[in-house]
Amino acid sequence: ASMSTEHLRIDPADLLQRLQALGEVGDTGDGGCCRLALTEADRAGRDLVCGWMRELGLQVQIDPVGNIFGWRDGLQDLPPVMTGSHIDTVATGGRYDGNYGVLAGLSVVHALNTAGITTRHPLVVAVFTNEEGARFQPDMLGSLVFAGGLGLAEAHATRAIDGAVLVDELHRIGYLGSAPLPLARPKAFVELHIEQGPILDAEGGLIGAVHDVQGISWQALTITGQSNHAGTTPMRLRHDAGYGAAAIATFVRRLAREMGGSQVATVGALTLHPNLINVIAARAELTVDLRNTDEALLQQAEARLAGFITELAAAEGVQISARPLARFAPVRFDAGVAACIAQQAQRLGLDSRVMSSGAGHDAQMLARLCPTAMIFVPSVKGISHNPAEHTAPEHLVAGANVLLHTLLDLAA
Ligand code: HGY
Ligand code: MN
Ligand code: MN
Image (tube, rainbow, N blue to C red):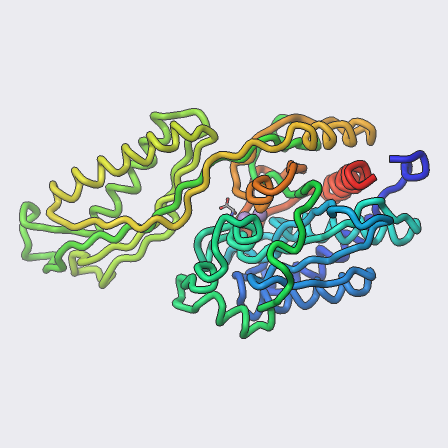
């Protein structure tokens, strides 16, 4: 960046006020927010952000899967340098997951507008549809379509866990756009995000220069047993779907502990039918989330779970079917962009460290299209997907300044 931008910083009040205002949309009253993808609350959040983009002089474009792009012209008509993230949340979300990366992008534009600076490459702030994957699977759906990893027709036909069809929901909230898909192939993509894990908070270090994201394997399991009387049915005659679900949840916990390394496993959703105290469950529906930074190990975890399921079905006399919901291999980011992030942090006097991401992010999809990396800031106690999610204001501002100078460097 030229000398003139050396001392440029974002306006802390601008960022913190936007985070506060967006955090009040879908406010759950406990410091968190619930804006599941394509719901009324998501529409309200999208409308607020689009209004801010227009106030900042950005040209707002919406693509056919509802991705929102705020375009800022550059001095030359070159591929844009893009930043952004998501503003949909899980049902018990905090105020920073996703929102922070989008709003920091707006604060960067605000700082450039105030300083009267136009970068050589255009700049784009993006909001990707359904990053969380809580309501519609897979997660990172909008950025996956943008990157060409999922066809638009297939994405449009995706059914939510509540039965709604994605294209109908886009239409209903007014975000079924017609911008080109992809809008443009970016020169580079940088996503600023809270770490959502305990490393920066526990081990010190303020800025994470993220160089890879772990692979994700999501599946829905349906266990079909036989409902029966809880009192009269001898244990040896039972086909208990509830027991099957519990056995799978304990197996994946043991498996992850045994494999060690970065292997994690979660049974996050579980429903029993008929879910009554004196009825042996006829059916169980559960989800399994497996992740690992190494693809071969992730496949090993999947294979061992599949083997366990086969044995369990035979032993318990139940049927168990699996439906894949998302499967993304680990992604290594661009070393050059990651180095640029570390360099900007250093220039700003902020200590940084190279690290992996345990969470999935839109950046892992953009990495299919262009040089991509991420910037992390600490999450207090590593808590996320929880209303208690928190990052110190000065850390939020520091991360946004690293984003500002990384974008200036890439767009020069
Ligand atoms: O599940 C994830 O890693 C992200 O929150 N979509
Ligand atoms: Mn996120
Ligand atoms: Mn999330």
